[in-house]
Structures are given as structure tokens and as C-alpha cells.
Image 1 (cartoon, one colour):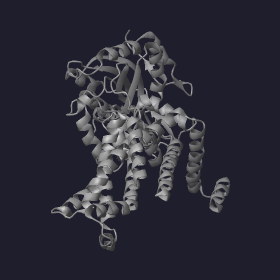
Image 2 (cartoon, each protein chain N blue to C red):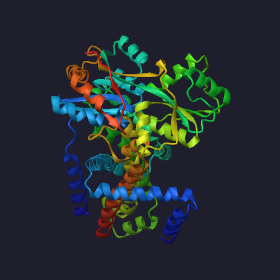
Image 3 (cartoon, one colour):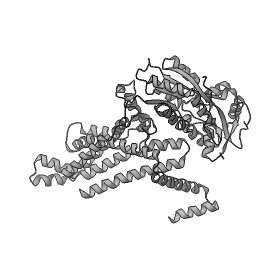
Image 4 (tube, rainbow over the protein chains, first blue to last red):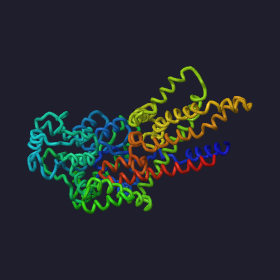
Length: 276
Length: 251
């Protein structure tokens, strides 16, 4: 029994002595971002280059824009990279964030089965949504208060339709973009996605996906990404200066070129548009 | 194994595409799991290390607190014992996402413990997981002590043991039951996603555990990778249980 307790004590000591992750190093920036910048691999590509340029390490947590903004409001992160301009402006106006800068965009597209059961191909977004509703085509929604979800809700509104909240043909997944596309694939339905994630999906399926782009190119489908530093007055603990450094870098010529060169299947995923 | 080969044959003749998909999933997962482990994939090992570390923290602290509490709950008779048992048993069903949210509320920078800076760290996750494991350790330890042969107590007493010796030998004799409870708690801690995701934030190289990595890969549509990581998690559990059973053989 004594030997057992010695063994247990040793085990406990080893566990206690395991190096705890460093808590508050000045050279680490914590970012909350959306699933699309993470799932497409953009951050995996940009972050090491930022570190090489400045020595600053970025830790990012990828969630929907709704939760990302909440994490910012609660001072849990130093910087946000999100894509819901109206919600972002509200966030800045409320005094939670500052120095919001637009960095890049891609666009939203409506994708659906090749057979296109509701025949929406080539229509305007307004017509397409009205047709889907009229023909009760399956439409899969993120339903998670993310940037993409917020955009989708605004499109139903713009098409003079109530959000089809409880309709049997309207499926709300509450999951990330690629998971939602996969559910749309399974249900043989339509969904709205950002183009970057769609290209990633095409790439996953080796360029031969069962869902194709059916509606695109409408001006309202623009998907603008921005970075926002957390307001130091609201959150004194936020590393505002480090965040500022990142904003300067990502809106600078070098990083903008990197974003432009980021491609999958030979297609660019994002178009840089920071005003220098 | 015979069945496996049947599936593979049917795959070639497109006899049963549904089974082919299942086989393909598992096969791809197996191959990828081996590949990840053998090629020393840095991301996988970082997640494995995070899982081992955080589950050791949490199982260590929950055993340290839970075994004495559970033992007392099972050993002593006192007023309110039954209601406490019911509460502990109920807490065994705590949903992980709920624990995650409550711990987040405490650890967020605007919460009561925000200044310690435990949000998005492994110790932060460990706090939540300790809350998850504690009722299991307490409940199953108490059961282990209670369900011991009643004759044992009389036998020990009749051999002239004093109360201290009775206490110690009861503790020693219930070790296998307590161990079983600890293993159950360890399994729960190692496989939970809700707490790790909410409190840890799934931050690459820092708080990405094997389970949050599985959730992420699944979200990204990389199902094969998800299956592979699931198998990696099973491999860790196997190593832990193997060392436990070796220890058990010695004592």
C-alpha cells in the first residue's frame, strides 16, 4: 500500500510539473474569427508569415461571427476577423471595438444539385429565393447567427419574404459552413455559402462536387471581411498595440498580395481590398 | 475478417454501395491514423499531447478530491446521506456544453475569475473537466465501498482490528471498485468535446485536443481525418488502460 501511494504521489507530481501553457506573453495575439477564414486554410497560410515579419504569434479560435463578437465584447480576445458589416458597425458604435478596417472580400453564391429541381439557375437572388419558396425546394440554412446566416436572413428580407423559420423545406443546421454544405448534399437541397468555402468543398471532393453554383454575381451577395481591434477603453487587458500591428500588416501591400495569391484548384478564394 | 473481404468484393461489383461507403470510411480512417502516428504529424501530436496533459490534470484533481469524498459518503452513516447520494448521481448527468458555459462565465475576462487569465488555456479546460469527473468518482467510489461484503467488516473486527485498521482495510479492499470508477471518469473526461470547445476555444498548437480536432475536421468535411483522429484517441485510451491493468496485477 505504501508503494502504491508513492506511485500515486509521483504521478500527481509529474502532472503538476508538466509545463503549464504560458498565460500572458506579450508577443501573443488572441483572435476570434469566422469558420471560413479557418476552414479554407487562409489563417494557416497567413499566420506564420505574420510571425516571420513581426515575431508575434497569433492564437485564433474559429467560431461563427455571432460568438466571435461576443468573445470580443467580453474582452476574451484582442482582435476580430469577421464578415458581418452591419453587426460589426454596431459593435464598434457600442464602444467594444475600434480601428475597423476592411481587408478582403469574396462573394456569396447559392449552390444546389446539378438537376436544379426548383429551376433557379441564372436567376437573380431575389427571384431564386422566391422560386425556392414557391416550389418548396429544400433550403439548408446555417441557423447559427454567423456572418453567413445573418447575410442569408437579410436576403430573405430583401426578397420580401418572411424568414421561413418553421417550414418543412427549410433546414437549419446550427453548424459550420462545410458541415452545412454536406447536409445540403445529403438532403439534395440548396444552400448559400461564401465562394471560398465552396472552392474548399470542391477541392475536398477532388473537383467533382454534387452541388454546383447556380446563382452568383448579384451586388448584394458581396461578402466583406474586416478586422477590428478590441477597444482598449472597454477592455484594458486587450493587447491593443499588438492588435494595431496586425491591422497595419494585414492591410499593407505585402499581406494583401499574399491574400491575392492564396489559391485552391487554381482559383483565388479572397480578393484583397484594404484601402492603403 | 471474412466479412470484410466480402465487402471489398462487393465494392468491385458495385453490389452494395452503402456498405462500401462504411468500409471505405473505416479503411481510410485506419490508414490515415497509422500515417498520422507513424509520420510524426506535428499537428496530431500537439493535439495528442494536449489531450493527455489536460485529462491528466483533470483526472488527477478529481481523484484527489473525489476518492476521499466518495469513500466518506459510502463508509460513514450520517443524516442527509441519501439526498446527497441522489444529488451526486444527478450530477453524473451534467451536460458538457453546460459545464463549458458555466466555466466560461467564470473565466471570461469580465467574469469573477477573469483576471487569472485561464480562458483558452489547458488548465481552464481542466477545471471544467474536473467538474465533469468529480461526481462520477465520488458516486462510484461510494458505491464501491457500500457494496463490499458486509461480512468483511465483521471478519476484520473479529480479528481484533481497531477502528483505524478497519477504516484502512476497507479502503484497501475497495480499491478495485474505486479504480473502475476512476477509469469510467477518465473515459468521460478524455472524450468530451463541449468543455474543451467552449473553454479552450480549439486554438491550434495550444488548446486543440483530439476531440476538438475531430469536431473541426468533421466540420471541414474531412470525414476520413475525423475517423483517423477518433482511432488515435482510442489508442491513447488503450495505452492508459493497459498501464492501469499492469498496475492492478501488481497490487
